[in-house]
Image 1 (cartoon, rainbow, N blue to C red):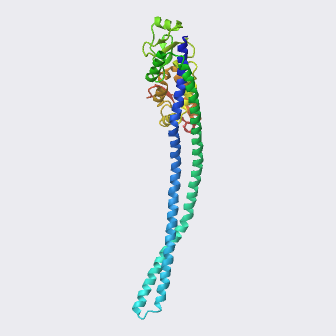
Image 2 (tube, one colour; image 1 turned 90 degrees about the vertical axis):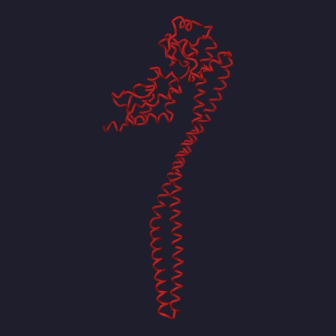
Image 3 (cartoon, rainbow, N blue to C red; image 1 turned 135 degrees about the vertical axis):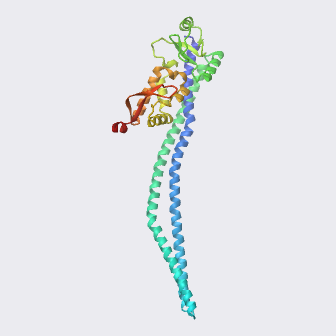
Length: 345
C-alpha cells in the first residue's frame, strides 16, 4: 500500500474521532441547559407555594391588626355611652358598637379559616422543598457528569489533534488538500474501500481494468471514478466496516451515537406511536456517518444495537412485526412494545 494512502486512512479514522469529540462537546451546553430547565420547574413550584403561604400569613396579620383596631374602637365607643345625654345619641353609639362587633366577628372567622388552612399549605410547601432538594441533587450530579465528559472529550481531542498533525506531515500538500475537500463534500468520508470493483462510499462499480490497478498498485493512489473518494483495496469476504478505515471500531461509534438521549427519545417516540423503533433514525445516522450506513451489514448492526437499547428500556420485540417504515434509511423495521403491554395483550 502506498504510504500516503495508509497515512490518509489513519488520518480519517482520527478525524472521525475528533468530529465525535467536537460533536459531544457542542451538545453539552444544551444538555446542561435542559437539566437546569428541569430544575426550574421545581423552583417555580416552590416559589409559587411560598408566595401562597406568605400571602396567607400577610392576610392573617392584617386581619389580626384590624381586629385589634376595631376592638379598641369598640371599647372607646362603649365608654362614650356613659357620657351621652340623649336617647338619640345613645342609639347612634349602639349602632356603631353593633357595626364594630359585626366586623370583629367576620374578621375572627377569616382568622380561623386562615389558621385552619395554614398547616396544609405549609405541608405542601415542605413537600415541594423536599422535591426541589432531590431534583437539585440529581441535576448537580448530571451536570457534573456532563462537565467531566466535556473535560474528557477536550483532553481526547487535544491528543487526537497532535496525532492528526503528525499524520498530516506524512501526506503531500496535494493529497492533503484533496482529502480535506472530500471530507467537507462527502459528509466526512474521504477514504473508503473498494470491494469486488464497488466503491463502498457511493456503491458505483469501477471497470475491471481500473479495479485491478487499484488492487495491485503500491506506488499510486486512486480515487473513485464517480464520487472521487480516495480508494483502498479490500479483499472481498473480509469485514470492511462499511468502507471506513479498518482500524476504526464502527460498532462502538454507532453504539455511542444511538445511545445519545435525543436518539433514544426518537426510538421511544416511534414505539409509542406503534412505528418501528428505527423509524426516524435514518436522517441523523446519514448526517453523522454518511452513505456508509446503507450497507446491509451496518443496518443489521444498528438493528442489534436498537434491540439492546429498547430491551434496556423495558420493551420487547413484537413477534412477526418486521413492518414497513417511512424512514429514508430503513425500508422496514421491527416494532417494540412495553413488556407490560405485550403481557396484557
